Length: 235
Image 1: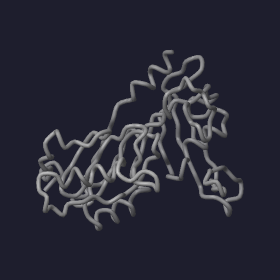
Image 2: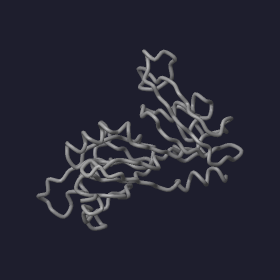
Image 3: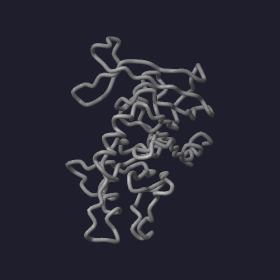
Image 4: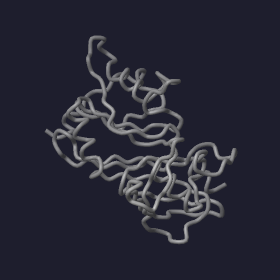
C-alpha cells in the first residue's frame, strides 16, 4: 500500500492549526508548512503556541478518546518558515531521524549583498560558545563538519535570492556560513545586521525529500518562495 492510499481524512477546517498548513498526512507521518514566528516546540516561556502543541491538538480532534499524537523528528528555528515533518509513532520517529542525513533538504534564503561565485559549496567546522551561538573553527577536532551548497537565483542592488541544499544539518548552519562570508541572511538578528525595515528572517525550508517510513516510497514535498522574499528583492 502506498502512502497516498493510506492518506487519512483530516479533521474539519475549523480544527486546522493556526500558522500551519497541512501538506500531507497519513497514519505514519504529518507534514506541514510553518509560518515564521512560530516555535516548533515549547520553551519555558511559551507552552501552547507551538507547532508541536497545536498539531497534537489537531490530530486528536473529532474523538476525545483518541490516543493519536505526534513525535518530533527535527526542528526549525522560530523565525524560519517552511516544511517540518512529524512522526505518529516512536518507530517512525526513529527511522526518520536515523535516515535524516540521507534525505534531501533545500531552502530559499535572501542574503544582504551579492556572491562573487554564483554557485558553490561553503565548508567549515562549526562549534558552539557559551551563549549558544555557533561559529566556524579550522580545527576538525573542535567543531562538526558543515557543508552548504548554494546557487544564486536572483540579485538586486542590495539583496540576493539563493537556493540552498544542506549537505549536513548543523545548528544555524546556513545563517553562520553566510554571516561569515559578510553576506548575512536578511533579517537575522543574531548573526546579521539589524535593519528594522526587514520584517522577518528570510530563511525558508522549501523542499524535503524522504523515504516513507512504512512503504519506503520516495516522497517529495515542495513549497513556493515566500512572497516577502520577492518583495524585498524588488524594493
